[in-house]
Image (cartoon, rainbow, N blue to C red; front, side, top):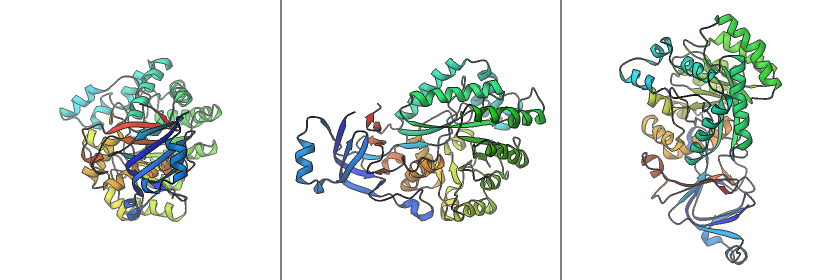
Length: 425
């Protein structure tokens, strides 16, 4: 493992010399601690030291600069910031769905496409016909694509199986990805993604709570249990039942909520202590107050926004400004999936957050790093640069300012991604 000294860094971003917060909320999301004209020393995969170039002392210069065992990287004109945390993805899937993309261009809605056999059920049919090995190799390629965009930790969901055998197959693929991935991966069971047409609603609910969840827990295949609680999918009562069983088996709650309507998903997520509620295109005062109550109780449920889904489906964007101005934090993720967000490009998510949700670049970076790390319980190890933590960060190409990253939405500005001090690209 190489020791690396980065010199002349234009700005070292999201850096803390003391115990960092678990997340940043409200007006504090504008706070992005940075050191201008900085150095950063990585030793054995950990952040050993950082500071201003002018503060490099004589001992450090003599030991670090003269050592042939330390790689020196001149970062003049470049930024270093924590690698992104993508806390909501569906990258284990079979095939693409560009036909539905064309259908939407021709005027069909997401729900109309689903009623005609498209949507989640389309992906489920394809996945059921695809081997575990094929799924693994396709998902592995997507994972490394995401890393190239600056992602240094991710969550991956099941949810395109919709049978016991195929949901387990998906989760085993995620398990295999965990074993080979240079980045941290969290696994989520999402058997409650849609109702298959082959069996009744009641029978599928029984399958979820009596067979799927117990087997997932027995094989230790997931960290979380997610439910798509929204209009046309799982009701609040069904979600409550599923999460009660999941909790009994040691699976923590996550929620797809309020993408299509004010579904009650936020409130039921808070009730179950969900680590995050995701989507949130439809939010009222009741939902905001529910999230604020979770923060007040010291068990914040993180609002996670997925702007590339709103972009791709031409939905109303989540009210990020309203959430932040109420004093809440928000996090950002890609929702990488074949039907509603076929992209793992986190820098583009930052651009969408700034352009369409009026988030400042500082707020967007907080949302994609520290707050996103909180959404999957990685805030102690990811999303911030601090001493003795794993060296997980991005080195950008030359940029005039940090705002240039979301501003220049069509450019690839990630020069290198480092995971535990190892260059990944």
